[in-house]
Image (cartoon, rainbow, N blue to C red; front, side, top):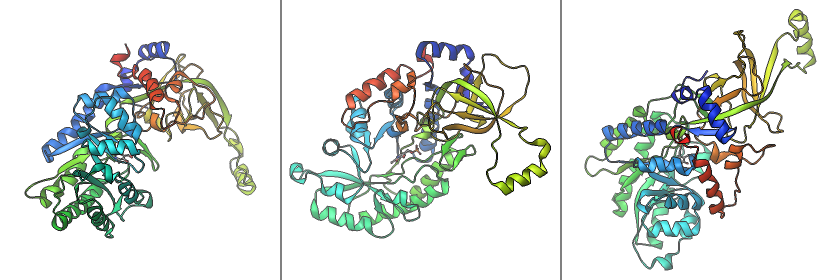
Length: 445
Ligand SMILES: Cc1ncc(COP(=O)(O)O)c(C=O)c1O
């Protein structure tokens, strides 16, 4: 079961008080974990490649208090929509501290960001051609270009311009013809979220070669190479399962830094990274309460032949192994999309059984979706209504990916399940401000 630092702080007394004050389910954050992670990545970059910038990927979790903690530490802001750009500005970021990515930037925010000197990475030809060139009145503007590589999947290649097939160079030709005052200031890539250090090394080669070719052909010296996010932390949930054994941040940074130092012996570009999960995943703990629990017999196999065979072979054991099903007051659409294993879980039990017996347990949600599982086949002691289940690694891609589908609205759900209308930023954020009071364990007291 969970051994991380934050769940250790969450003793029975602390959790009871938090739930008394704020209700269950509840998402809490440990500010010190966020700061530690930031110091680690900053330390690695400063040693290996001092000309660097770190930008927090706001989409990972856009609670204002989290963003402000990072802002106060000197982290820039990486945004991907009009909403996130607005939020970053609202929280005091200046345009030059904002990196604006994404395939669907709102027209107004894109114009504002470009005019005011944010680092805007153009995602598509259509996005560029829709810029208000007349309004720009020959003013010099700087753009970055989002790139992709054929060495990765289609889902990666849907963003930006290809580095290998000449697409990016044809685009720059078009840019220069359409608006000669446009300077290419940077190149950007994000390799998706489960990345090895060797992938960064390879992409650093490709981005550097592209930057050198751009300077040679058009004279624009590339000021930054932005490598996006993708740095893993132990316990990160992904489409491929849960990852506990992950590379150190130094390994990732070294892969990129060595290439840039070699490729740019004189004037060096900024090395930018946009971590999301790395900074906040481990800081978030999701506290839930068991609403009911029961034991069921292991399900029967519907395949008649297999069933008959199993009956003959294991007659004595038939239906002997029970499975525990514990339902909690939240569900997988609310916060945690992928399954948790024993190491993510800390239990706080009201009536602890003296027996040490554990059972194969499924933790299920309170929605009406039958396969609403938060954990499958993990070994837990007998659980009762009122017991608390704490899930670690709940900081990243939880709130920002939560859905509306639920049968009950617990307090945390009320705070996060707000209208998704793009324009109603005001409403949406007021609610997040409320949720903010939960941020930081010390602050909750
Ligand atoms: C452009 C960009 N930058 C940064 C990130 C953050 O990635 P991670 O949370 O894996 O660090 C993402 C995530 O999707 C992204 O799309």
